[in-house]
Amino acid sequence: MAESNSPGSFQSPPAPPHPMVIDGANHDLALASCEFFTRREVLERRSRRVKQLCRVYRELYWALMEELKRKYREYYWTYGKSPFKEDEKEAEGIGDYPEGIGENGKLGLGSVTGSDEIRRCDVTGCKAKAMALTKYCHAHILSDKKQRLYKGCTFVIKSMQSGPLLCSKPVLRSTVPCYCPGHLQKGEKCLARDLRKAGLNVSSTSKLRPDFHVLVAECVRQIQVKRRAARKATAVKIESN
Image 1 (tube, rainbow, N blue to C red):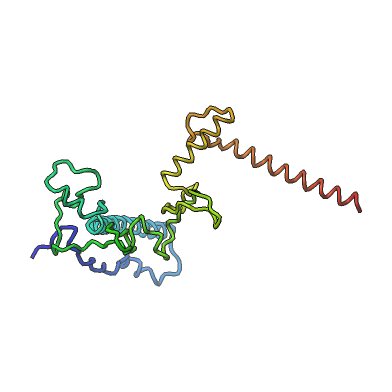
Image 2 (cartoon, rainbow, N blue to C red):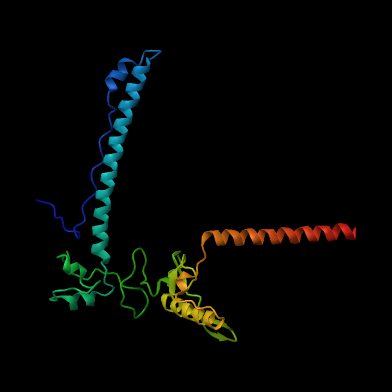
């Protein structure tokens, strides 16, 4: 029976390869009892083994590429791009699919078992699809105590007596400043407004980053200021003694 090439049919991993045989092993075995080798023999053996090693690495690279394609098909089949299964049902029969909707149907893929195997978010009342390797969707990913990729938006929505009320929408930890897209845009607008009040006409806040030589010059200036302050403090101590 022919194996199915559908991404939904998970194939068993390939059999382990046979033990590798070194090229020219018989010739090396004949010279194993020799105490000394000529320069040509050494270079030929090294060249033969380097070429074989290059072939092995090349075969391993393409094997990893095929494994990556297989795993990507499985991931795409399980999670797709649409956060709601209802979106795919609504997109059925539409010629031009909207971006991120009905991707499985667009590719001509069907369910293997015919049942809804999509994992939903564990938050009560949330029907969104859970993200990969977690039980929560993107909106509730901070409920996962084991995740380390996201943290809450630190934009202060309101100041209260008990403390500032933060937005706390999930954003990547590498995001600087740690704002969600909406509050990041709002912060840029506030910054541009304050700069205009200060007399600086800046059309785009994305061009406020100084050049590298400006940063280096500023770092050198701060280091020199600290050194001067340290010398003055040392001189005052010596005079007082």
